[in-house]
Structures are given as C-alpha cells and as structure tokens.
Length: 398
Image 1 (cartoon, rainbow, N blue to C red):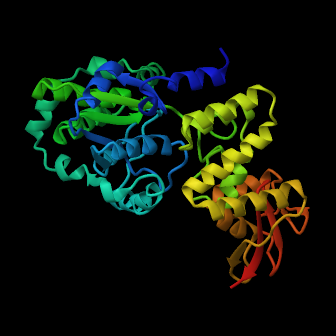
Image 2: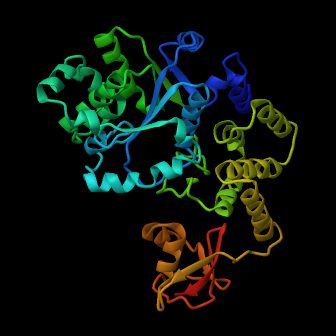
Image 3: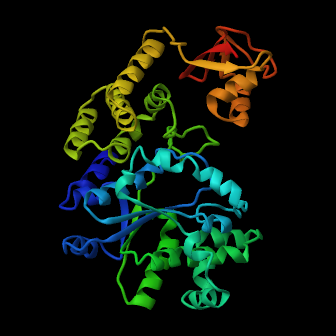
C-alpha cells in the first residue's frame, strides 16, 4: 500500500471525522466511540506551555482536533501551562529545558490566543491557567500525588534513559512535570486529553490519577505530527516551519516549496477539506497529475482557512507573478531607520537576527538583483530586497 493510500485509508472508517489527524487513542478507540455515542457532554482539554511566541501549522493539528470537539458540543478547555512552564517539559528534548521566568511566560502567551483564534472559536472555549490550582498545592499534597507514580516509569522513557546513559543531568524537578500535568487532568475532571505523541507519558499520568482517585476511565488522544516543508520535524532553527503569523503570500509560497511526498499529509492534517475531496486530489496525484497543480490548490486552501478567500487569491497571484512569470512583486514595504544595516532590514522581514544572519551568510539575500553577504552594509531608500525564494520587499526610510 502506498503512503497516500495508508494515510487516506486510515480515515475511511465509521469514525472518520474523529480519527482525522489522530495516531493513537488510549485505552481503545472503541471505548471512546462508545463514550461519544452516549450523548454525555464531555470535559476535553488541550494544554500548551507558553515556551515560545509563535504557533506553527504543526501545532494547529491539535488545535483543529480541539475545535472538532467544540463543534460536537462538548466542554472544551484551552489550558495555558503557565505553572508547568516554570518546570519545563523535556518529553521531546535530549537536554533540560531552560527555566523561564513568569515574565517570559506572560510575554510568550500574549499572542497565543490571537494566533489560535485562526483555528479555535474561543467564544465556545474556556481558557484556563494551571497556576490557578498548581500554585496552591501544599507540599504534603504533592507528596501524596507522587505516591501514584514510580521513578522507574519516568527513567524508563527513551530520552531520559539516553540522557542518563550519556551522563547528562536529569533534574529532579523534571520528574514532577508528568505529576503536575496529571493533576491538571484530575482537577478539571477530564474525560479526554488531546496532545502530540510526545506527550503520551504525561497524558497517561492524568489517566492514572483519574482512575486511582475517582475510579473514572478517561481517554488520551494523540495527534499526528505535521512535518516541516523539507520533510524534517517543523522547527524554527531549520527554517522549515509555516507559522500561523506568516503573511498570506509567504504562507502560500512555503506550501508551494513542500516536498511532493508531503502533499497528502498536508491535505489531511493542515486543512478542513472534506475527506472525499482529499481522496479525489490524492487520486489525481496517483494518476499522474502535476504535483505543482495540487500544491496550488493546497496552498490556496490553507491561506483561505487561516485568512480568507481574498487573501488566498492575492497570495496565488503574488506567487504566479513572482515565480512563474519572473516578475517579482516588491510591493511589501519594510521600514527602517536612516543608516540601517542589511541585517536589520532582513531581521525585520524574517523575525529574528539569527535567522537573518543565517540567510545572509547562505547567499540567500540579494539587493537590487545582486547577492549581498555583508550584513553591515547600509540599505538605501527604495532598495529592492529579495530574501530566499519567496520574500520580496522595498526599503522605506522612516
């Protein structure tokens, strides 16, 4: 069976809408289906630790699943882990996370809701902060919670085991992270938790507390990973992420740069297209359709859902003019101070100095048609700057 057939056939079931974007349901899919069929209003939550300032399209897979439960009429909570972020989750890291201050956490969360609103209808979702209950726990209560878990289970996790074998530090505070997340689930009396597969251990801690303290069966829903444009895990450091804050034309261009083998998974995981339409597009690919044509439909759909049809059409036109008709559109303006350097101008376009430096050193920036590698070069009024393959802008002096 081909990759595309594997992806699509997984969703061609009686639980098609539920299973879309899901890898694992614990303890069983049948148990969750029975619960959903019971007409009971369920308590469902997704937790996010505000350890960064932006949300990418990979994060949006879980957000889409959360919204699907909203549309089913359940009690849905978007939980901000402002307290657990003080500890730091290393579920997907091979080293300790740096400890964030309360101020850093608040700054990171400032834009979370606005970004997530592109996916989630917050008029029907409760937003909560787990500091509300975790910060009030007495030490004696934490000790009692810890009695439901073993250190052996924690150190048996692959990444933790590897760190110990390599002689790397594993902080004692890290063992408390799954306990705290488990208490989130218990405190909110959760029926269903949603998260990435890297969160499975932490989410199962919630199942443990619900079972031990309430004798209640709860469910864990693990969503699929959406890979970055180059086929690796979506990451800011690799420059392969599609951010929800990307401008429409940049978002469209990034989708167009996808590896062809990722088209099917993006159709399934990054859009709300009905699955019969997804299957039809996949069939066209299997029958020899030009991947570029399918990617155009995919890019248009993604921009439409995160912005609107007008912006999607503008982005499509920008791409066509810039890449297919060799007529770059420099209508985007970047404002800088008199005497600003190329590094400052590019940083304004890509969002960080480190990424700007990387692009300049990699010969990925040109000014007025010539590649420039001198990051200290001053930019002038009306300079035409091209960054990478998709970003074009004209310099304006403030």
